[in-house]
Image (cartoon, rainbow, N blue to C red; front, top):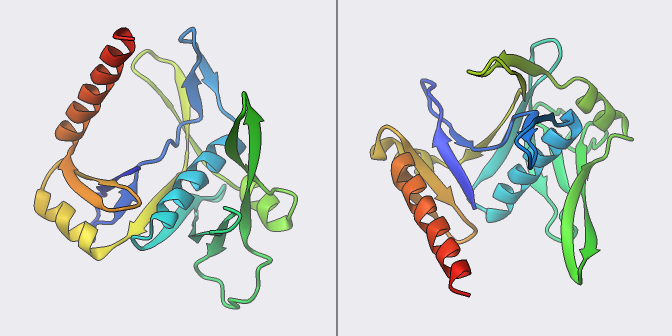
Length: 206
């Protein structure tokens, strides 16, 4: 499942909700830092998941250290799960030297297989991609320093954009492999809270 909203541009785009933050809270509630490599891998994984849903082309935009945006098509291999970022301005479509790869791996834990991704930064393209990523620094309401990765993911689906516009302010789409559902932020989080409560009640009844 993925959450998609419209941006506020003149020609609104369907932006996939991804975690750009380079900070997180540990179990004790302390603010910790996340590596840029980890953050961009998580964003690419989410983008690849949306690509696999088949509702249209998916692109990722990242801001480099010089302030310029670089755009990539997001492809996902159905057989091995590899996610490939292909530059949208690539002149020679047969040239794969500029592609950035995120490889999928499996790990067994307590009899269950878990999948995770890693950025292939051993290639020249992967290394340059990682080194040139840009971040934004800011302070939260408590005065703590935080940072975000300058990256975003867009799902190119005209019908989805049309329905989000018609829904109006605070509209969002919940996209899954079977369909997409248009709702509002308020309705979405209300349903999410209700589902969480039911899970907690079921756990208590055991």
